Amino acid sequence: MAFQGKTKRIQQQFPSPEELYLSGTLPRTNAAVDGLWLHQGDVIRAYAEHHHKTPDLALELPTGSGKTIPGLLIAEWVRRRSEGPVIYATPTKQLARQVLTTARREGVPSHLLIGSHKRWDILEQSAVEGAEAIGITTYSAIFNSSPKLPEPRLIVLDDAHAGEQFVGAEYGVTIRRYEDPEAYEVVLDALSSFLSGLLLQRLRGEPDPGAHHQVRLLLPAINPSALAKLDAALAKLPAPYTFDFAMICSGLASCCVYLSYGGIQIRPVIPPTFENRIFSRAEQRVYLSATLGSGVNSNELLAVSTSSGCRCPPRLHRALDVDSSCSLTSQRVGMRSV
Image (cartoon, rainbow, N blue to C red; front, top):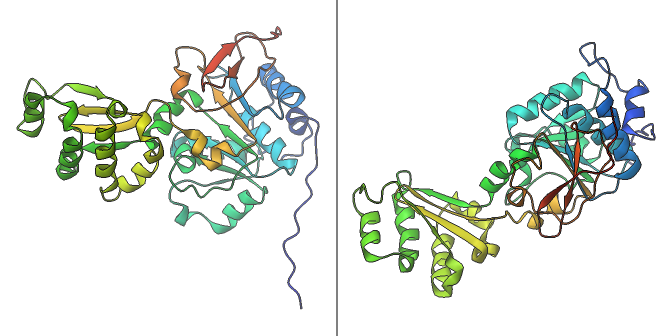
């Protein structure tokens, strides 16, 4: 008797995420919200009409205006179109759990994929990979040296304004002197050509008031021989530095070194997210934020290539362009009154 594979359930299609929500198809609980706010409906309607295929799209909704539900509805609408896996990412595990609670309350099928992939439920992981449920995860599960998530059709990145801190932390080597003095000495020796004899003496000796709180910025790329020495030193460091170095080794020449008595950090100015297959091979990336374009240095956020605007109500939402130089540029377009 031949074994038959699991038959994929046919999902009912809707013209927009808004109509999916209003149809009553989603098994919402009694704790679900009463309905969408006007600006939430405008945002998801504009997405379906104009930006379903936009590679990179940033949506700005102020704090308290409700980012999670539009993000989940967009994710569920795309998932139902059977175009591939859908991932919803947050900066922290706590936020991921909050999104899962909201998703289940609103009847959006989803599973939590956080922490070590070895502890993920195999059935839940398979459901996400087969686009039977949305995978809710963290930035660190995407941006690491060996991500285990499926390559998605869509990634929704929640709280994108906080993304630089969490994404940038994955692309760098940080050595704390008091935790690993041997590794500190090895890397300090590789950087010695950038330092004066007096400063090097102070860094190697007992804490000196003149150098203890100072942080120096070094650019290894200006000295090819020193760069090669630094590369060799980092390559010899044991785990966990091995995995950290794997994230930046190909672009070490573009990295900055922050040197102090207490530690050494080596990281690029802009994380090379284009090298990450989960992020770069997604057909679309949607960034949800409360403060994009308002005091946020988006050059340091996520390296992306293209984007376009989205029609939205004034003050409640703005569209952003992502240009080829990896920056997010604020642009007001087609405002509509509430």
